Image (cartoon, rainbow, N blue to C red; front, top):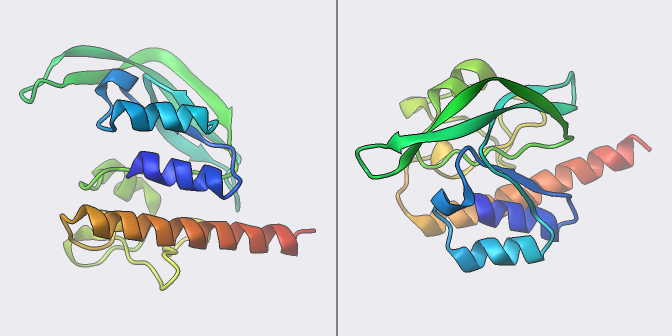
Length: 173
């Protein structure tokens, strides 16, 4: 889903960078999908973990930390571990968090987003959360194990994000 969201954001005209805490070899996406994303102009920043989104009313930058991979876990996947004193900042004006089908409790705890039953993020009809420039979809907002629901939700959320920021850009001119 993350790769799909990134590719759709790129098609809608955004400059896109995927930040991933593991290497490309550990991505769950298929190799040809990653290659297609690169061909479409999507950048990848591997072995890097988002730490904090900075800005006031708008996203201004994202704080990142470099990671390294340790031994494999019980599923045979290598565990990413933060490298001490490796924090750095990257300029950004939008952030799409593709967190997977299990909510990251750290993200929810530090976000001040309104949640409902099952700790699902509450959204409006435009996929907007209780914070003006934050959108959510998929398993973060409703229980589902259906990939097609996740893709549909991602498409709709991406279109609403695009429309929202287009309106903001028009208003701020």
